[in-house]
Length: 316
Image (tube, rainbow, N blue to C red; front, top):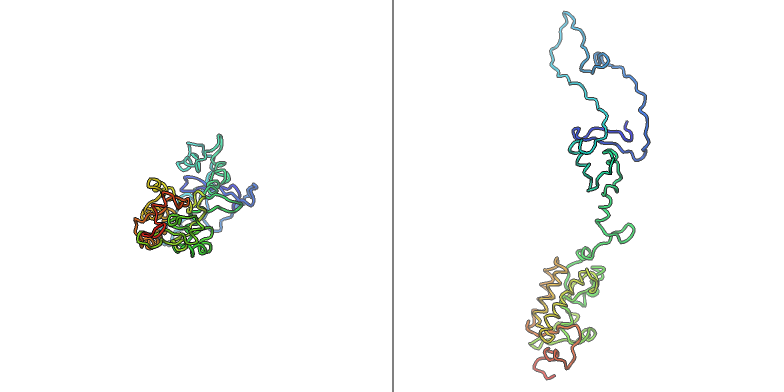
């Protein structure tokens, strides 16, 4: 039978344990002790002696005995009551506990036994578990945008296809042009969707709005801390590079900067991003001038004269 608060030795008598019975923490008196009459002759000796001290039967003259050497056990140790272990005077294990579980030190005058009986949340264990995830509501844990992003497939397809597919394959994501589409046209977004496109140096038209390589990225481009926002970090670098050159930069520069930021947003998709993007834009002369500002280009602006707004060799 075991009771609440029963104690016993543990770890080769380096420390002791105490039973906490959560269903019934009441204290009960020890049941009435009863003497047990030995059933085996010679199993007990005079009062105060152990079984090993019992006197054997007297040797009877003329009787024959088998000579069998049987080692007899020593006295059976009797557990002694364990007093509270004061700090600095117990075993190494006890002293280690006194220094504090999870960095929480015992209060002044608190015994070792009382310290070990503290609820888990007082010892800092429960608090540590709560800090491991940021709660967004009762019983729920908010998952970071990065964690959600890793569950999305590394698919790079034309924007026209990804615009719908991303909502199905990667909930919470948006299709992102790996190379910003505003680099490839002169007008605003609506105009570019309808076909506004710059020309490459060889006279071919640059990739259309719907055909631009795109990948699914979690979050809105303006929401700080999301992969989509990280991928648009290249916009500032592109505009800074173009500012020193009349508002334009080369196609090769624009693609390289854009790809580097897409890789930062989804490094696990490097193979797809590099292959699909350079396969598409590798068809054009990398020295082709492209737009380096988000604002539409005016027809008579200095920047417009640096771009191939019309097919090279054709009068404006």
